[in-house]
Image 1 (spheres, helix red, strand yellow):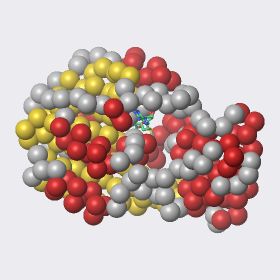
Image 2 (cartoon, protein in one colour):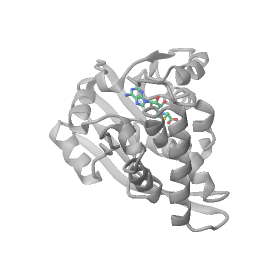
Image 3 (cartoon, helix red, strand yellow):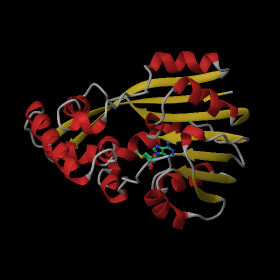
Length: 257
Ligand SMILES: C[S@@+](CC[C@H](N)C(=O)[O-])C[C@H]1O[C@@H](n2cnc3c(N)ncnc32)[C@H](O)[C@@H]1O
C-alpha cells in the first residue's frame, strides 16, 4: 500500500484526453461476451472504469485502487453492477473474473512474472486479460528524475532507493503469456504522440504520475527542491517548440485463456 496518498486526481486529470486514447485502444482488444464479470485494477477516478462497464454491458465491474483520494472520486459513479473497493494490486488475489483489466497501473507493481501469473489465476476458463503499461522509461522525462534522485541531498533522503521500472520488453510479455497458458494473445508497443502547449507541460504531466513516487518519499521542503532541480535539468534537454511533441511509448497486452 502507499505509505502516503500523494495521488492528486486533479493533477492526473489535466491530461485526461491524451491519457484516454490508450484506454480506448485497450478496450478495442477485448472481446465482449454477455454478462461479463470484470475487475479494473488501479481504476483511479473510475471515469474510465464506468466507460468500460458500459461498453461491455458487464454484469459486474469492480474497480480496485489503493488511493483513497482516487476512490473518493470513483465511488459516486457506482451504479448498476459497478462498484469500487480499496485494495493493493501487489496483494490482490481475486477469483472468477471473465476479464482482468488494467490501464496504466501495473507499472507500479514489482515482479511482473509473479503478478501476471497471479492475475491469470483470477480468470475463468476462456477469460481475458487486458493490460496497458507505459514503457517510456528511456525518455528524458524519466531518466532525468532518476539522475536527480542520485544527487545530494536527495540521494541521502531516498536512502539508497531508486525507481526501477518493472515493465518488461514486449517480447517478454508475449513469452510470459504463452508460458502461463494463454491460448491467444496480442502484444504491441505503440508510440502515442501528444501535442502539449510547451515543454513545461511535460513536468506537469509527470507530476500527475511518475513523480508521485518520489514525492511520497520526501518531506515537503525537499520535494519542492527536487521538483525545481528536475525542471532545471529536464527543460534544456527538450526542444523549445510550441506545441511541444511529447512521445510516449506504451505496451498493450491482451490474452485469452
Ligand atoms: C496512472 S493512474 C491510472 C488510473 C486509471 N486506470 C486510468 O486509466 O485513468 C494509476 C492508478 O493506479 C493506482 N495504483 C498504483 N499502485 C497501486 C497498487 N499497488 N494497488 C492499487 N492501486 C494502485 C493509483 O492509485 C492510481 O489511481
